[in-house]
Length: 452
Image 1 (cartoon, helix red, strand yellow):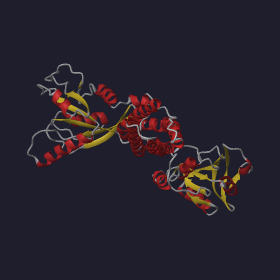
Image 2 (image 1 turned 180 degrees about the vertical axis):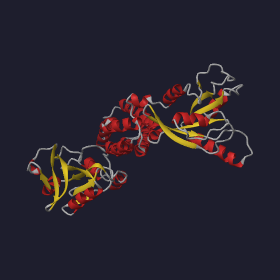
Image 3 (image 1 turned 90 degrees about the vertical axis):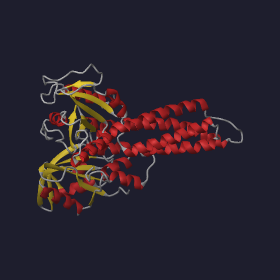
Image 4 (image 1 turned 60 degrees about the horizontal axis):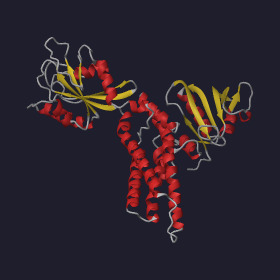
């Protein structure tokens, strides 16, 4: 955790491009770059103001390596809270390596994974949950994941946790104070107010914990299983949603014998569609395996599109299917309504009528998917938990809060209540970094890219 060395790394992806950015951070960052930089206008970098950009050459002795732009950020007003220099050079891999090697032999060392962000955390530029959101932002591949990461980076989640922790800490102080006057049998903490606080904290923690089920799939896409009997148009639907011939389409029932998966983004939300083998009784060994995999994918899916053929319907077992998939979000879809022989079922509040072949009703289907995905949670600015470490800490904190409530119900002594309160505070502190260990930080930041 020593951060007195000057570190360097490539901040842009490795490879050839128009430009590359090399980041340097540490107390000596500006002075080290100044020795290897010759300004076009003759400026001395060490005498320049923070947040300025300078044109010149990076030189090794008298050899010019490249014409570059050098950006200066002086502590504490920088990403890491230290002196930071960013060198924008041409994207040749040779140039990148020459500049890196030049500074490595002149006082810098290579940064480890996430070390720039680790230094930002250690220097108080952000808390731990905000630092983790940096990695989520870099990895975001759709609007929903981007929104959640931005919200966490801006401190929305941190502020909520810190507010709860501060209120709990105030009552904990009063409980601890009672221990100093145990002989006098006095109460400084109003038990009724304390219980109300614990109920409020419980509600907030439960909402955050519940949000993880949705937030966890945002990164990888919400899994949607397309299910139904053979030849109802599941593969055709997948193809029209993806706008490509991803799955084989045939009039022969049982064509799809394995699951086919692909992802699209609808209004910023990523959906991972799974075309499954048609469900029916069969003696075909390979088709049986496909059907078994269908049921496994149904278990993994958050949302199920159950398709029917509008040409071959009699009584659709809505209630039976709703009971069978009661723990899943379920959409009934009646396909092939473009056929002359198609039949329209009685009005049902959860059925969509489409033609996967012509595209009729597909936009309505997409809107229904968005509604079922609870996408409004993000748009409303609600805090969504996406990090499994945060999820675990919230669960542990909730368990300790429940113990405190049980202790109040049983009129336990202040010293016993204090033990569970301290544990709850500990787990809340784990989220924002009020409580850390070297192992924890090492595990978190090892998952970052080198230049961040």
